[in-house]
Image 1 (cartoon, rainbow, N blue to C red):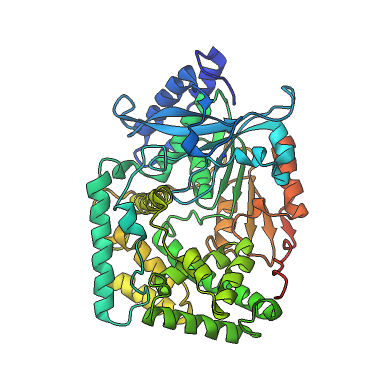
Image 2: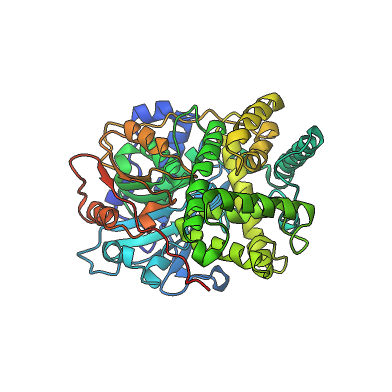
Amino acid sequence: MLGAAGGVLTGALIAGALATPMASAKARTPGGAAEARGVQIAAARAAAAGIDWQDCPADWALEKPIQCGYVTVPLDYAKPYGRTIKLAVDRIGNTGSATERQGALIYNPGGPGGSGLKFPRRVTTKNPLWTKTSKAYDFVGFDPRGVGHSAAISCVDPQEYVKAPKADPVPDSEADKRAQRKLAKEYAQGCAERSGWMLPYLTTPNTARDIDVIRAALGEKKLNYLGVSYGTYIGGVYATLFPTHVRRMIVDSVVNPSREKIWYQANLDQDVAFETRWKDWTAWVAKNDAAYHIGDTPEKVQKQWETLRAAAKKHPIGGVVGPAELVGFFQSAPYYDSSWAPVAAVWSAYLAGDEKQLVEAAGPDLSDTAGNIASENGNAVYTAVECADAKWPTSWRTWDRDNTRLHKDYPFMTWANAWMNLPCATWDAPQQNPIEVGADKGLPKTLIVQSTRDAATPYDGAVELHKRLKGSRLITEKDAGSHGVTGLVNACINDRVDAYLLNGTVDAADVTCGPHATPVPAAAK
């Protein structure tokens, strides 16, 4: 997302788990030496205990031969003998021979708040992009602290969380802004009331430490890691704290690790990038007007969007889909090319008189209690991690100024993004200073993969991390913008990912690849 099946491990493996982070890494770490020592203690314990692998619980929806287990970690690494939590992990063994095996490949899909437990299903579902890699590696996923089956947190009742329609994120008045500010403050209070014991410890450095303990529990001396989106920030922090523990590391669709970007400015940068990618999609919809009949120019498609938004604001579609729900659904198109055709098809059907598809796609499903719990939990962890990782502006004047200015030119996501993050302005838990990401001595070559028009993690983030990780190689997918490049069919990228994971080889210099194939619309009706 393995090694030993549990029991007492050999002295060599325990020594690997106990490898001390470099002094320079300690200096970069919030909290410093106490946490560094706490990781060593926790990793040694985990190496000795291993993981008691079992068939996965039926409600985890992970088919055999995937196995599940838990790894125990300190809540607070400065107090390794204090309170602990259990992290859910799963694995599927390498499909090749014992001699082909190169260890475990640990995966994080991003978020913050995403679960990595589906990663081994790339093997059971026979995903062709990962066939070669799975011969060499056990695929290991996990729920990060606070997520899913790993001491899950909550900020509000899940059924209340998904109720709709919510207020239009674009304010019409100061009264609208006051109402949104009140909701954000109440959400922050809900987090403190429901999960306050966990909030000070839901940080990216702690998740990186957790990964090192998982590595030790797996019996691995070195970490093989694939991180996507927010998982790239975890990877950068891990490389900073534990450069000598890295064997292979791929980071895909990169969060800008600059301390000036984490996290307030990073979200403002997203607003600009989302608008760019939104325009890419509306141009594609216009080009394929024969299939969708939405508009044959980008301007006409944009006008249709504005008309839809206004109509949903006046009379929520199906009683539940207003502007907030529309943005929630339509934003998947700028995120992922795989959503281009499905979102356009739902929109097209609505314009043809079928609103049911749009209501089902964008509205809540109150009967899906498990899904609603997962959605609420994911948002809670997203908020908690971003609020804890960095100090946020507490002055509403700052938020109002920045988002009002951006909204003028980048209206698609700006205010929706602002309200999502505003709880951090009144967060009732400690906020850290971001770690200074960077590694040189002891870090092997790492691989960075990024598309130039990514909406969620703008391209500058990959360039910045490339500068900070000495010896890294950057693969750029030019004129493309889907998020999560390693999951797409592009031989120029796929072959290099395989070569790196299987042989440790990278190009002599950075590489620019052409874009993957543009999505194809459904046949015209």
